[in-house]
Length: 245
Length: 255
Image: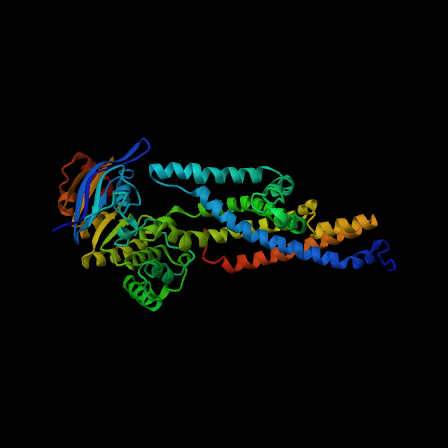
């Protein structure tokens, strides 16, 4: 089967700082891949290279066969197929919850307002924030905001979802409500790449876990294998630290 | 007309006698201010965007810097770095004759040029100078307003597939506009007051009316105090309108 995402020799440099040093990986259709690793290891940069928010210095990124790294590619079109959820939610504060969700489909898919609204409401039911549909983002809790952000990304009916530390800026008691929504999405067969510090979630939901450090993928494998029997010494040290907590 | 004294010293009859001149001056001041605010805002938006323009890749990158960003920066620097009064004089006595001249005007020549210069010369140069000056200041307001919006907003919009333009139009500019309202209001008030400088090249607005009356009677309290109150009323009204706008569009801004 063709890979949903295919990354080859991907490097990214910010000035003198080498953030990614030759990444090779692939994500299959309907696969859930969690990326873990210490801060500054390049996890988020890798994720942002997948939808072209960050431009690769060298290497190739293919999403459903479309070369994201190629300047000639229409990135806007590619991005409609890839939803992204950010650590800081990034909801549009001047728009209501419903307007946040209908904005892109209405602007890009020429949906009739009623149709866009109906779809948005269905998504809000799904993520459990329907009763807040007419509120503004600043009237919502962090967990609610993040669930709205997931609904907003889903409104474009993407084939892939990227999550950039989706629970890292949440109060602890709100983490689960977001993870539950993500798990449901995974169960439906969504292709997902999740950068996360939630080891429990990675273990439970991921088909495969990538451990990154210093711009490289140090180790990868099914969660039970990587968590129980990490082969690399660096992975062992990292897991010993985070799992003890 | 019999002298009419208010409070024993204010010759109200002078103002009454010239009331038509003051009214016409008032409308001219209002008209010039509105036109210059509108044109200046449009110019300011374009220049502000130009100063933020960026291209990722080599040929476009250099073109962008030298043909868009650099000229915009020089323009803003010049009009913010020189006195408005000097700009008005330069515009009226140096630039305008170059553009509109019966003999060899670059834009308009011949008898039309003579008529335009005669009848509208001060208006054209005054409005032009004020617009260019306001555009420079407003572009800085736009630039700061756009830059103050968190990068995550643009990224979220782009990640959904919106183009740069759509992200600007739907997401960045509406939020930036809210933050720009207070400084834009201040700028409009400054423009209203600064429009009095255009009287120096003979545009018949409020300050010019006062000067005419002062010259005719050699009395200074009456005409200048009168226009001072008229300006004051106008700025108060403008400040009130800006506050109303802020109140109306101020919702949903968390930062």
